[in-house]
Length: 283
Ligand code: AMP
Image 1 (cartoon, rainbow, N blue to C red):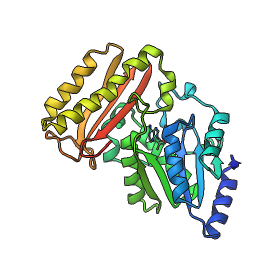
Image 2 (cartoon, rainbow, N blue to C red):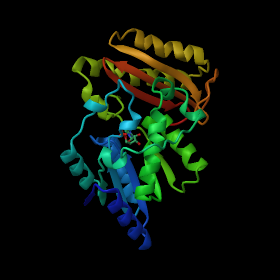
Image 3 (tube, rainbow, N blue to C red):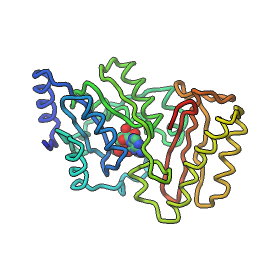
């Protein structure tokens, strides 16, 4: 496994691999890898000749009062997971390498970035779109894999790649959960035991909404009330948003259908967790 920190070296390597006719599969992450990341890496391993993983905690996608400074990091362990998943190249640039002082460019995907996490985290998706474009220009992937855990991020990236003709095939991967239902996240490491227990209300609300939908409930108002009732019993949790939207446009809807996205963000103490499901899809 080759570990590369420099942008030039990564670009030169990618260019020469492509000249040899190799396809490049790419999994961008912020590290502190878990089984969710590993599922992306395994799929990338199966689909590409060369598998590239990036580990980069991207400062420009964090708001002023967010967790950039305490975001969990463990390079040694991440390299172990990467090796186990058959990664060929780990790209680990520094923030100074990615964003030198004169850096002043931003990519903004408008409508699809606005609701949900975009409303609570102004500028977040600009930071994501900008870093993903920069990483694509450096790694030159044929395909890139992203988790549906960050559903809106995936929608933003799909829109950006299409709008800018970036020529990268985007693969969306299912949400990987802990055995008790909590969606895996690097941020779960922040949770105290009692917060971890309370956080199960998130996946419980998803299961309840899916069950009610399967039993024929179509009213978004009723489904929303049912989900909110579950959170009313959890004093440690504060809903940031809990919304039903069209899975493709992310526009609000009033009648649930197979293409309905149920998405939520919840604050548990100082930790913000997100989760979602599309009602017509198996989990
Ligand atoms: P992150 O390191 O949190 O930026 O995530 C890197 C990639 O892993 C993103 O495409 C995420 O959507 C994906 N990912 C994170 N958690 C999960 C999960 N529980 N299941 C599937 N994919 C995930």
